[in-house]
Image (cartoon, rainbow, N blue to C red):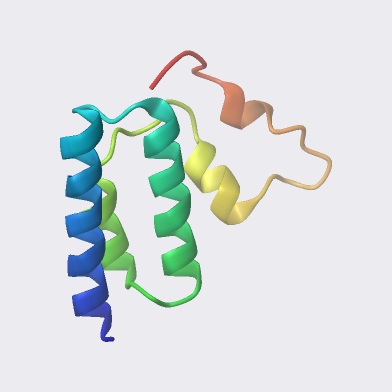
Length: 89
């Protein structure tokens, strides 16, 4: 399956989730989708542009959680930068 076809399949699945759970998606469902899309990008199953296009279909978390997952923390960091902003998203 080509990345274009895969991205369209993922778009359909995300939209199915929106229909089933309502908009905005519940925080837990959005977090699961963000993780799924990050894995697809990491493994080269979707391009960076496709990842960005799909991600805008999801509620965005406050703070810097997604960057933290992709890049990790600075050596000795405690992850505090990701927890800034707190609250729901």
